[in-house]
Amino acid sequence: MLGRIFKAYDIRGTYPDLLNEQMAWQIGYGASKFLRDEAEAAGESTPMMRNIVVGRDMRKSSPSLCAQLIKGITDQGGDVVDVGMVDTSFIYFAVNHLDCAGGVMVTASHNPPQYNGFKISKRKAKPVGEATGLAEIRKRAAMVDRATLQPAHGRVEQRDLWEDYKAHVRSFLDLSGHKLKVVVDASNGMAGTMVPRIFGKKGAGVPGLTIVELNFENSKGEFVHEPNPLVAANLAQLQAAVVKEKADLGVCFDGDADRCVVVDEKGQIVGCDHLTALLAKHFLAKNKGSAIAYDLRSTKAVEEDIKAAGGVPVRGRVGHVFMKAALAEKNCIFGGELSGHFYFRDNFNADSGAIAMCVVLSVLARSGKPMSELIKPIARYRQSGEVNFTIEDKDGALNLLKRTYGPESAARGTVDELDGVTIDCFKVHGWWCNVRKSNTEPLLRLNLEAKDQKTLDKMLTTISPMLGHRVDH
Image 1 (cartoon, rainbow, N blue to C red):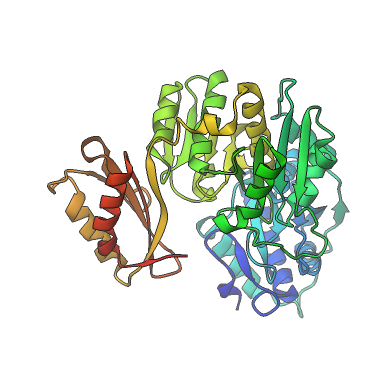
Image 2: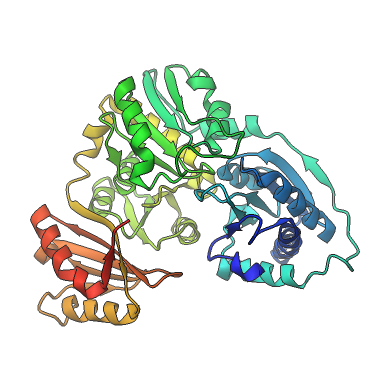
């Protein structure tokens, strides 16, 4: 049963049929053993090395699952720092701030209310995925027998770190004396707790800032709309409110508030890759020559604008495990993904929705321009967005794509396989694309970009039949 809820990057399933309190205890036991062994193997010894930070989101099942998770950790011998109901990025901060062995967040992120799960981080808040510890945690969780176990009685300490967290997040905010009005959609998730704690009720804690609050109620664990800002339909309420309120900006967070999507003053959705390019220029203005990591599905404009601003572009694989690794390996000052995750060197290379909002507000305030004007020169190419295709022979389709457009073909495109297959015919033919396989479904995911709409339409029509049956969500 445990095998069904362990995913590539986290643990997740519907409650209580796939994920229940007994499993939470087992996972707590397995995670404690793994995290403490990892810390000891690193040869680092600090007063907090036995400690594991635990937090939870606002879902109805989170309190009971969290309680049993903590019991599993302490029965194994780990000590727990319980930080209460927080956003996921809070955990990354707390692990580093307290120098603990790791952390566990009880959350199902953007999933519907019947789901729950666990996001696990080790020392320095490094992510734990299937290849970096989840498989080991699953094995240890499956082997433990609660009935015969002699519990080790680790201790539990409840800590309020909100003031420290607020100071850290606010260090990225500088309105330079300007006034801004922003509509924030908390999606009935953890942003409903985080935003008032960081910025004050309706922004009252920050001079010059006014926040119009949407869907901040999170005590019921229910959602007015799905807490996933990547689905355009979930942004409709925010878009309408931005226009009605004549706001400078709109920000929508996902359920655990580690991701956000921005809407400009006209109510138009800002692509996360376009936002990456904009924020990259902000960081490079003070840090010439620094590296910037970005999702390889991003617009060509990201690479071009990073170079133009004196930075070093670093293409990254899709997923927070790979992005955080890229930041660490290349000493990147900033990174961004199409998923709405934004990463910061000065945030322990971790992602933060709260810090992303701070930086966006700072850029907007200091520019003196509306968001649409800042984005317009970046959004200079036409994009398909992610298009899904159902097909059984995924490898066959990718091989056909490479034969048709690779260096030996008439198109003479370049091919790389950093993540899926990327075909680049941009310099000669004005287009490029990336096609990735789904890990869990018979799907191929296409992202295609062209210099103009005519080329985009032509290549979509040409390439689509090679990839199977198009699925429109």
